[in-house]
Amino acid sequence: MNNDTFDLRLNTESHIEVHKFRAGAVVATMVAALVLQALLPVYFPKAAILDLPLLLTTYFGLSRRNPSTGLLLGMVIGLLQDSLSKSPLGLYGIAKTLIGFIASSIGGRLDTEHPASRFALVIVFFGVHQGVIVLIKRLLLAQPEIWFTMRLGLAAVVNGVVAVGLFFLLDRLRKPS
Amino acid sequence: MATIASRHRSLVLLAIAIVAQVLLLAVQIQRAQQNRHDRLVRVWTVALISPFERAGSWGVGKVRGTWNHYFALRYTARENESLRRERDTLKIQVNELQSRAAEAGRLAALLNFRQEHPSAPLVPARVIGTSAEAASQTIYIDRGKRDGVLPNMGVITPDGVVGKVIEAYSSVSQVLLLTDKESGVGAMLADSRLQSPVSGMGEPLLQMKYVSESDVVNPGDRVVTSGMDRIFPKDLPVGTVVDVKPGVPFKLVRVRPSAGLQRLEEVLVLRSLQPLELKKEAEPAGAAPDKSRPAPAVAKP
Image (cartoon, rainbow over all chains, first blue to last red; front, side):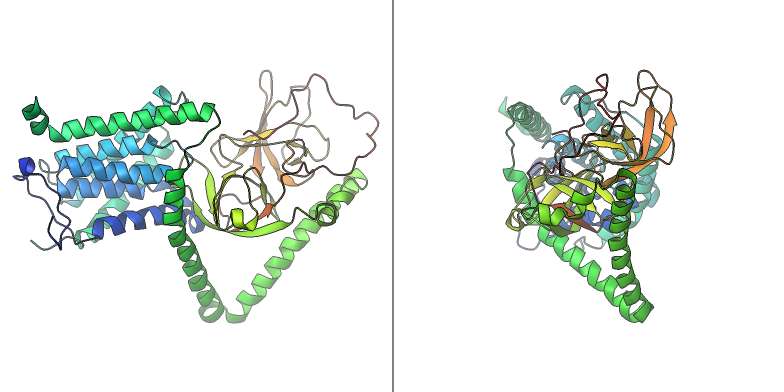
């Protein structure tokens, strides 16, 4: 890692094109996402439908295209999200670890720059994320949880729409190649 | 072996991360069964995030205040704010007077709540954040241990019951809303005095449990606290019955919360852990407790 970038890519995966970000951009956006996730619903209750930490995990996974950093980023933001809720530590951590890994693994194989593909990918990741959470709740926490509701379907679409705009803004944080 | 691990470095890392977190979950379940809590990470995270939430809440308040007072309706907004405060005060008085009229002074002690419980003042608090996950219905308020707020203290608004404190940090507390699946409050119907706990379902409406088929409940009936949970005093508004469906063995009774739980900005904390019992009264004739009814409502831990 040099002084003005936050590039953690590994030698074994260096053939994959990655996008670099300005120093501190990843950490700052993570903290901002967590603060907004907690603050927005106070004034706009319907904003609770958003999962900004998931969108960030997806974005940085798709952009950096390094599974190791993708899963670590997902794990950290997931654990922080757990810490701010009353759920046991690790619930969102595991789900976002997987999302970070999958997103960065497929980031180099798909066109992740087009708004339509971003929209579709976020919907898929939202579903996978929700599936993992329900699975953990059922298997490890013995909590009965419904797999799918209309609200979740709507939430997936809303997060997909928001992701298109958010990812466009986050693209501004990329370091020019 | 080392070569394989190196080649599949990310997969190995993924496996380690998942296994470590599964173990973390298992440890927490074990510790929760022993009533021990892993709080250090939560304390750190709350300490990291809450200043931003507090600043954000302050910033939003300032921006909104500036807009309302200077750009939008300069004088009307101020007057409106004053009237809203007065309305809140009047709401409390109306609630108290309604119950008093219906129950022949049963609320006399509640009216003197402050005098009877000098050690249990109401602490006003601002809502500075919500849970970072949509599934749990919790909020963060800007009062903590240094303000005398402790876990299991009740939280209300002038409109009704909000929930109870589940975690208290130095200057911030986490409140479990009434609508959470794990939340509950001892309640009764205001008019018939039929007692039954009310619990959350993870959605905007609440559920009144253990109302048998023979009990009469109608949409529009007011639900108030029974005081049996020893957190909230008797006769605070909980909600209004909006739907009653037959069921076996109990009716399905849905209740809309009185407090606007979806849009809370300021709340009051009942700063007392003592049982909030009002003065003993003579039992009204014919009001003997029903032995067939389930045990008195107690808020879930």
